[in-house]
Length: 441
Ligand code: NAI
Ligand code: SF4
Image 1: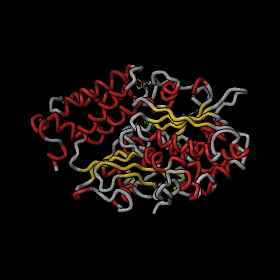
Image 2: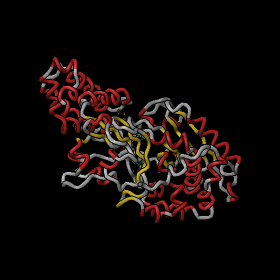
Image 3: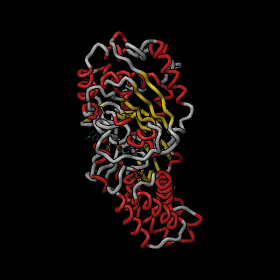
Image 4: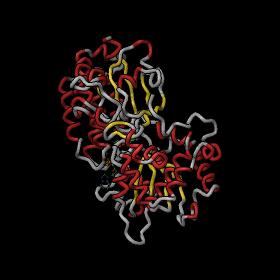
């Protein structure tokens, strides 16, 4: 059984409220942290090996150490709660059921970074959660964990919740900052990174909800103990939101030592695939990461079991591996049609492109149109090559990673499931009434 750090108290009734949270050890990490110097806390986070849980896996301690500290310029912590990656809903769970864990993590992190005003930017569709967060903020303030001179330290901290308008692109950190400043959420060119020029051109750290929540157990058990959980550079625990063709969809906390097979089939996690169907493929890190067929999902190219961690999932590069990403684990059984699935994703990315860069603005639309044609049985063999060509021209040629995120699913689908694309071209009539999966199994 995986060790629980973030969700260990999630089952306790009323844990959403300050009193219950406090009774079960809440804010003890903050009390411990406020007896330390900010540099000592930063060192603990570095030692823990914590990697950003939003998708990129960038070392959190290193990111914090990049924060510029010009004299007299305010600095900010911004929590990215714009969780919009299809298949990803783990931050929603944390904010809905454990809001004080996030507030406590933010308090400690704000103390380290010297942020007197910190923000939570939350996706518009999570319409009921800002009230939960604001209530928790008020409770923390009333208990002296936010506001002026926290725990007699002389450190002041306020947290504000800002609702987004429901645009996927505002999860990209610089688009998020633009939106937080009241402008259209267009990504900025990097560098400069937010750590140097962020919110209102001030040094800013943007971290995912889960990354900030993880600071609480790190201070509780120490960075060194946290680093002992997991394996290699995949330290600590990771929340996985599992969905698709599985018996038990939900949010699971894993310690990154379990195999993908165990995660899908064990009763402790996904509980297998409904109706005894066979596993076809999986997208383990949210819709932007490459789809992997079952044979490469359960084992690497060398025949080793594939594990639920950053390194093992990526083993073999994009040709045979994938990415941990945001931990949005989407399972497809044998009845699913990869062409249909890829088309749905292409429509999403086309709709969500901000339109600043030509390869993304035009390319996502072309990919969607071609995929729609193929899926409807109106495509030609050359269209598959054209699709491949377009995704190659998008990848790496755009301002932000949305371009790559739109290109990778198409590339992986063609690489691993070209036969399904060809089936649609060769069976125009069948394509209109049946999907590939149902017609072929
Ligand atoms: P990135 O790799 O460009 O950056 C990671 C972080 O490190 C950023 O905060 C960046 O500012 C910081 N950083 C990197 N180099 C730095 C330097 N030299 N100096 C200062 N700071 C530096 O990745 P990005 O664009 O932040 O995230 C992309 C990921 O987001 C993808 O892997 C995707 O899986 C994930 N994603 C997650 C979503 C969700 O709903 N959770 C939605 C869409 C994408
Ligand atoms: Fe906008 Fe797409 Fe360019 Fe990102 S890659 S800045 S979403 S057009």
